[in-house]
Image 1 (spheres, rainbow, N blue to C red):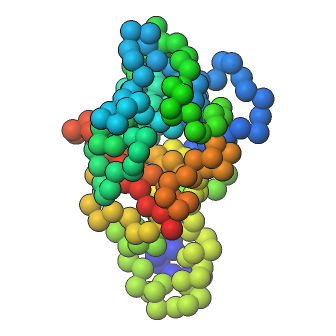
Image 2: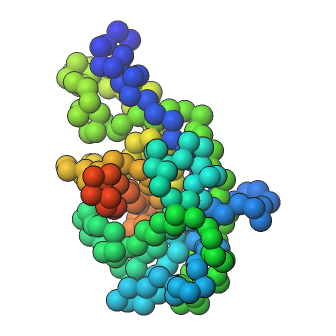
Length: 229
């Protein structure tokens, strides 16, 4: 289909790194996990906020991620925790209902048992793999890169867009956010990763929702946004 926008969109494809959660024999040398088996320094307590200890969601060991984390190579491990009572609303910064912790190295870290009050999820080890298909921005986000007016005027072209320019909708690093609703109007930094509702660990964000994480290299701040059906 000879539409200029499609040629331009092809240049925007990115390879995302997708999380294979379980369905393989755990390897004691692998440190990336969903919902448990988190490393904590023995001199530090389990992460907590005003509502008590926090729920362990995702532990990413960067050496296991092909290509690292969108060229974010300043640490060896990232952990993400959630408040045990409620999800934050709108776009929130690190520490506002969730917490992302960075470790420069693994020195002194030990696997710590998850506190009993936040053991509702089932832990699974993660293998990170390059996606076999490239990621593309969703319809709303694509307009910020490409003029889709010609596509919008043709039912055939519109159908072609949604068939061909897709992105991975489960837990992944890099690529583009697989937004369920519209993407945020003012993205607070570069999209880095998303954590989706996942069946195996019994993890649910709202109604089968997804959390999207952004990093501002200038301010060195992380932000999070989530949406659902």
